[in-house]
Amino acid sequence: MTTQLQDCGTAIGIDRADLILNAFDGPGKLTLAQITRRTGVPRSSAHRMLERLVQLRWLRRDGHEYQLGLRLFELGTLAVQQDRLHSAAMPHLRELHRLTGHTVHLAVLDGADVVYLEKLDGKFGVDIDTRVGGRRAAASTSLGKVLMANAVRVSPSCMSTPPNVAGSRADGIRIRQEFAAIRLRGVAFDREESVPRIACIGAPVGLRGEVVAAVSLCGPVDRLTTDNKTVEILRRTGAQIYQRLGRRRAAI
Image (cartoon, rainbow, N blue to C red; front, side, top):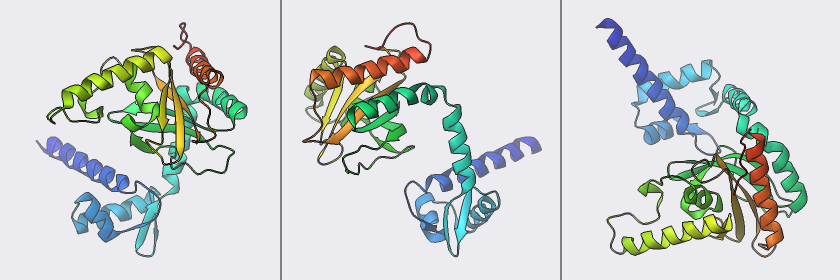
């Protein structure tokens, strides 16, 4: 019984640490009051947890404000270096960046979001509001569309219209038709749906049911061409990454 209680207490502590660390989802520093509002953790418990996280270098404290610490950066860097997908993709992402000059992304699907694993900034002086480790709603991005279109099963939460909304049946038909078109083309497009004045093209890394990631090109809407040459370069990049992972079949 004592062991069970101890295990429960440990789990609660881990959950609270996770809540606190997730409160720092964005740039800048947070005060104790801001953290308690965002997490719902009682003030005294949050303060104790914060101070312990500072001691462990997960967080840094500057006066009355806290920010993410160097230990998280160190572990995050190691995680990226050890990730097989990232390692396999990097040479091809750099080559895609060299050939096009546009911003290049590598991402995976996590529920209704895409999570960015890599970003190489474009050469056209346009700041695209994405970052490694960041998230964005999958349905509005070329990356998310191509990942969902090639998934075996897509959760209803990923769809743009909830199932209980009137007219959602027609929306579901439209989405299925769009996914079928994406599979046929081998790429998905995003024209200012995710970021104003930015267009993107996304391609899968893998085959339907075996898609492990997606790669995209993003640039100013008036400079990113969507001709066959650009599309073919992007599709080939996805195929090369998939093959480098040791898969025998090429990406679509």
